[in-house]
Length: 172
Image (cartoon, rainbow, N blue to C red; front, side):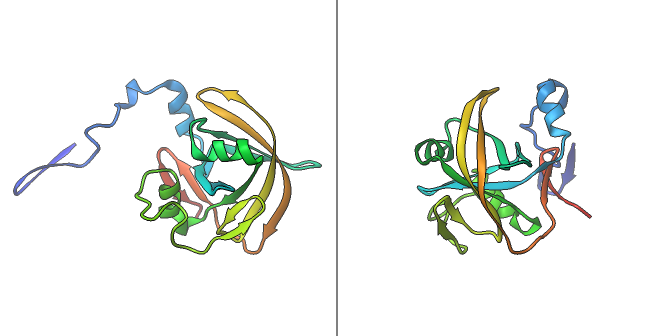
């Protein structure tokens, strides 16, 4: 879709985007499932925005996530065997983009904001879980990481930030 405006044509959509009918059916299915937007960190420091994840209740509780095997985060988790998981809220869109590599991070990922060092990695949210790596294995084009939750800090509860069909969404 284009719009004729004085001075030339302006695209109203991404002219370089893969047309919907050419996308992988698996990717199209995944895009239609709402996913939480979380920030995972590890000592190093390293961090990554992760939406392919879930929490399994039990004794002990567990966290599972799909990480890019070439990411600095996976390298740090594999070395230190600990990590944090923090759900992000509606006001964290720029933070999510920065840790996803979609936004410049002048001074590094952890520049700005208030970060607290923990044994599991830096945290900058009130709600977070400290986890110990118990297993990992290749899964699709990622590595499936399983961690046992060793500590949880719940100071406030805010609505979650959701990723759906390539965009951030909020619950009403």
